[in-house]
Image 1: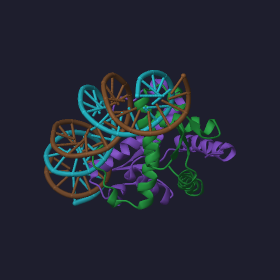
Image 2 (image 1 turned 180 degrees about the vertical axis):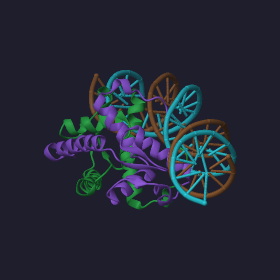
Image 3 (image 1 turned 135 degrees about the vertical axis):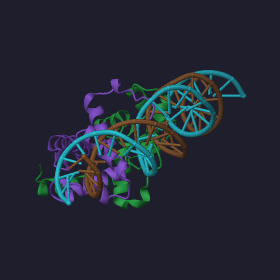
Length: 109
Length: 109
DNA sequence: TTTGTATATTGCAATATTACGATATTAATT
DNA sequence: AATTAATATCGTAATATTGCAATATACAAA
């Protein structure tokens, strides 16, 4: 991407955009789906669940981790990933606020 | 971006990723914020609301329009943009389903 | 200590995104 | 018809993303 002028937007706008961007790839949605589906941490199973090479999956995990959507714990030989509750709730709150605004006010063409 | 292998993911994963990606820029969040805030269509005011040049804003509007999040109507000399209810509701449904799954099931490290 | 297994990092090619000046288009106004 | 105003498109520079082979790292097991 080109340089995006984050300094001109509010912190909330930048944060929400970062979170949305992190989810803006089907592989990363698939990772989140998988984490939610299995009801707990995932240790050493994610690569096999995705139609991508191991380094590519690792990179997607890194991106999700860098915005805080997931967190990883080293567990012996494996790395266990799970949803990061704090960030997830923040994301949820951002969006629920948007959805609420739309429901209450929009009266459009 | 490089080529993303959309053919390996489900339609839902690809759609949700596209919508999230479209919201993955603070300028586009700002546009949505503004549309929601003003409670109706926006005619000819968006460029002045954003700290970006007119062609850049036009490009962001085009991206939001191309995934269906907003729609535009020509109104005389102006173009009026508003949230596209169908897509917005779809996006909302996708996310509410994710949030629900998290609430019910997640029991994590 | 060597081997095997899981994950991360590096490096790079192909492609996409962002931003904006210049220019085109379209319609209202004079 | 010429001017003004709003928006879109084109072209392009700078930078980011995606994907993966090769390689590194870290730990467990033999």
